[in-house]
Image (cartoon, rainbow, N blue to C red; front, side, top):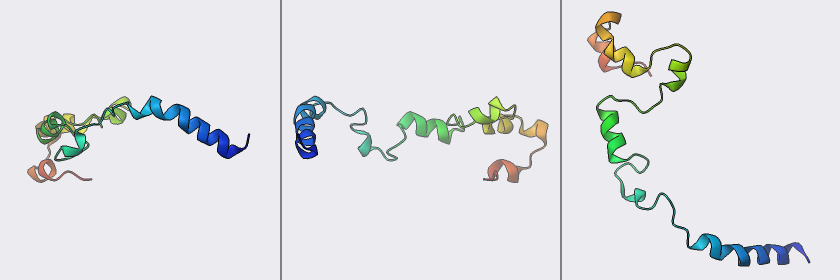
Length: 86
């Protein structure tokens, strides 16, 4: 059997298996921001974070939310709170 025949056979056999499977992302293309759920957008806008602080916290650094929660103890200015460095 040549490679083309094997490829054709595999496509013929496997196509029905995956053709009827619905993606876990169906409907997400209609979101305002496709990759964020309404809950995730709300959490982000309320400053609850997105789970990106994990690497900082595992290395004994505070995450962004913790820094904002401790703004007065850290002596942050209003400018630092409203415009954090990127």
